[in-house]
Each structure stands twice: as C-alpha cells, then as structure tokens.
Length: 231
Image 1 (tube, rainbow, N blue to C red):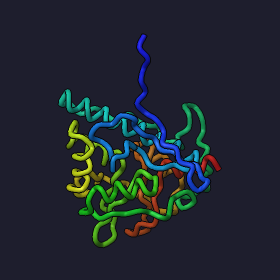
Image 2 (image 1 turned 90 degrees about the horizontal axis):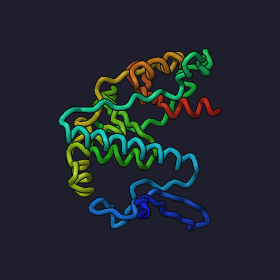
Image 3 (image 1 turned 30 degrees about the horizontal axis):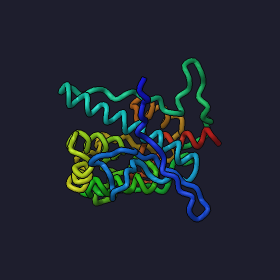
C-alpha cells in the first residue's frame, strides 16, 4: 500500500532563545507569500498555537462551503456552533448571576472604516490574533462587524481556483463594506453577562460590540467567555 503523504508541517524557530512555530504547507503552488509556503501566523505559546489551529479549522470549513456552493450553485448553511458559555443539555450555566458584560469584555477594540480595504481588517486580525473587527461610521457609531470567516468566504468565493495572488489582490481591491455584517446586535456594558450569553447563543453570534449610548467601549467574544470560565 502506498504511503500517504501529509502536506502539512511546522516551521520551527528557536532564535533569540525563544521557541515559536507556525503551520505550513510543504508543497504549495501559487499560494506562497514572499516565497515562503506558510499559511498561518507565528505562535510563541501553546494557547496561541491552539487558537491558530482552531482558526485554520474554521478556514477549511469556509473553503469547503465555498467549494460546494461553486459546484452546486446552492449556498450551504454554516455549521451551528454552540457558544462556550452555553451549558450542556440539562445542566446549569456556570456564569455568576452578578457578572456584567464589563467584567468580561475586551476593552481594546480594533476598528476600521467601511471604506477601508479588506486587507486592512485581515492584517489587524492576523497581528492581534483575533477574529472580529468592528466597523465604525464617520461619527463613531457602529456600522457593522467583519469576521475572519466573512473575509475568507468572500475572498474564496471571488477567487476560487485562481491562486493566492488573486486572493490577496481581492483583499486589496474591495472595501470592508462588501463583506461586513450590518445586522449587528450590541450590548450595554452594564447588562447581565448571562443575558449577553443567551443573545449570542440564540442568534449564533461570535461577538457583541459593547456600546455606551452610541459610543463603542468594548467587544464581547466567545474567547472572552473561555477566559472567564478558565479563571
């Protein structure tokens, strides 16, 4: 029986006495960046690596959906993910009833303008290792949210089979407003965290922009719940 060839590997780096890794594709045609067959960011700790592997899994799911849609002409539904704060069936929530959104939210929110290139949002996510960027109007009000999934699915749908160069060109050519979600639910920082968790679970949301009046003051994501539950 022929030996199966696994096309994935790791780039290892121990310079400056600090170890780091990133996932790579060993044999990659047309999708290299600067001649290096790497498909993920540098990870210098286990948590960052686990988050990157999770992101790559999501990206592969998105590519699979785009491919099926291209072949059948029908949009396939995204798999429904259970938010990390959602309790097992028959169980009880582990969230303290006294906790407020402000107790768990991320305050340092990265934002873009609706006319910024998609590549700007993509670079922010890669540099910060997060998956959502809030889109603001000129007056500072929330206009929408763009997720890593939105970027990947949009770019893959536009450039399916054309290679990495076409993918990168699309990110530089189109504005964020072409892929962002405009039906955005927001939450007040003083709202009970359980209510925010319920809203995210019911609407299958990956994040909630946190606003005080009309001013963006934070963002609540699935990752924030994970960190909270992990202590």
